[in-house]
Image 1 (tube, rainbow, N blue to C red):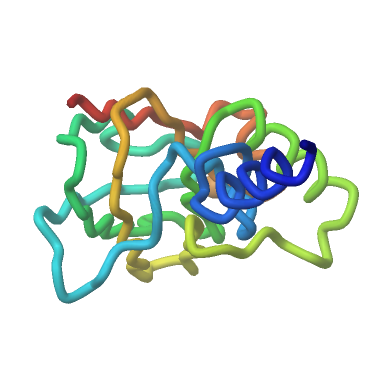
Image 2 (image 1 turned 180 degrees about the vertical axis):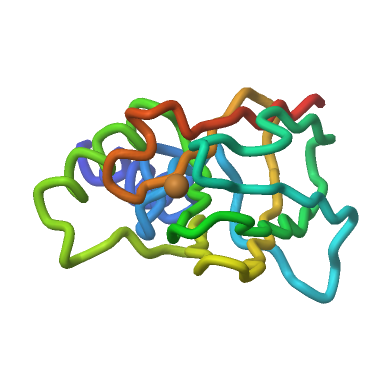
Length: 150
Ligand SMILES: [Cu+2]
């Protein structure tokens, strides 16, 4: 009696239908994109005034986006996709353990004067966030929104 339910839950977990993906980003966010199949490139500037420019992007569900993140500042910055509640937890973890910075397919770090790329496929509609996880930057307001429309 209990066995089929256990199998069903295991299948749901494998399909990414519930909870967090193994890599630490929410399953609803989508998945790493194929750099050879990009629908659209979006340039985003980051700078030491702790802002993303633009800080809001609108895209269509199913699109693979190449974010080209240009660091015009003197400090290192990051762009990490996710949902704000979880990203805030990651920011707190990075304050506690700054020697192990967040890394994952939903994140890119950009040295001063450099450009970083992040290719992501947004498989579901919804509102998502992106932040900089360099300690202190998110609390200074370094975040933006991705609005994925169906
Ligand atoms: Cu930053």
